[in-house]
Image 1 (tube, one colour):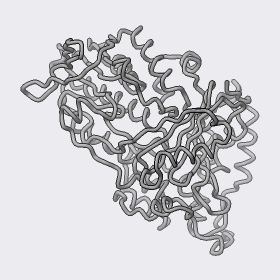
Image 2 (cartoon, one colour; image 1 turned 180 degrees about the horizontal axis):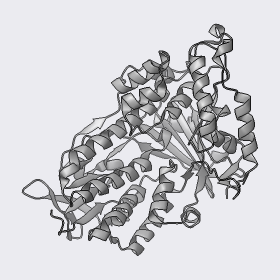
Image 3 (cartoon, one colour; image 1 turned 60 degrees about the vertical axis):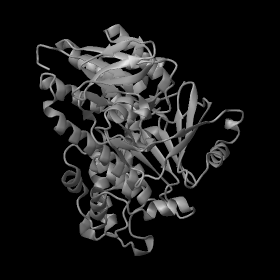
Image 4 (tube, one colour; image 1 turned 30 degrees about the vertical axis):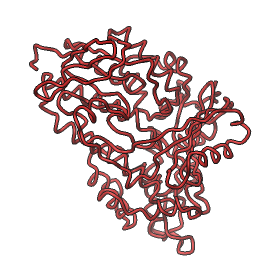
Length: 498
């Protein structure tokens, strides 16, 4: 397609991922004449349990020019300063840790944390628990808002919790106002041309939707990418055991901490996500170790009386990615592109990055597939990098009470990159240098995140082997960092959810 022939882009499937992709492609390519149509059937439901995000969602709404107050109120949204991992380690003192989104204040405390981690990895007894070093952990524990007073110019980074159904509805209304064409139709066939590209989508009503570029947001079914185009699926099942989930909402509780809780269970983990109108709960588990009935019973026990009388919803997960996100004239997005379990809430993050990078690659080449191979390589590396980080949660776990956790810790189905990261930690290498060398400048997780994971589990020599730091080691003063972060708390108001 030449520069003077702007494309008609047809997005198959709605939900959060479909509408995020449609809105971004419209924002980026409509000024150059592209037209975006989204077709979805209201008779086909969405999974609707992706209720957490990274700060990428804030960047998305800022990019669209949508005010935080406007969309948050419409989507029962709350703030998320990070994730509290509880019960993933049995080592005393490391029963839980907080994985923060790093902010500007942390630039002053993070070096001390990194320095003490290096000392403790060598067997010196210095404070190196991540909770002591980052502002977000302190704010979440104190139930503070992430918005400081006007006199404090260092706002922390944060994500959100939200109702996935309402987020999709909000984006649908916003997109239609902006000029995206919305069709409520059920698509039951993909028509391929003689060249193998998609020529049109055929609807149950008999209507034929033609286009130049098609975006597959049809969920795990992947009607275009995997079914019609036959793009191979790269499974992550060998490194990630979890393949099912059971979901139950409970009543809203206030005050609540602006964080996601990730609590280890007997055969997986459960999330707790506070929204303004309810609390989202779900148990992600391996069906090899729990039946669906057993998982539901275990979740109900953990929720206590708050789950009484509430129906549970059961889901199956297909964990992995397509080999090529952009194949022919089809871009896969959302669950049709891939899925990594929701431990780090990366689903919408990937959808946003995919749409933005595609728009840049496709638009800069004059709506031609010139940069397709480079784009596919970058997206695949991002997926694989996220898989490695999540796999590391299980491989490094410090639990021994069930067969599930013991098998996770013994898992040898690791990528060469993850093996290299683990080797870097245990051989006392500089982790920032290792991340740059192993994953490159586009690594999905910075060195700080890897430090929090290793240190949060207490992945250090045993207490019996610890020795006092040598006088010339100059360990960073955790008390000074704690005092500085405590002083910052006064610049933030209490945050009442709901």
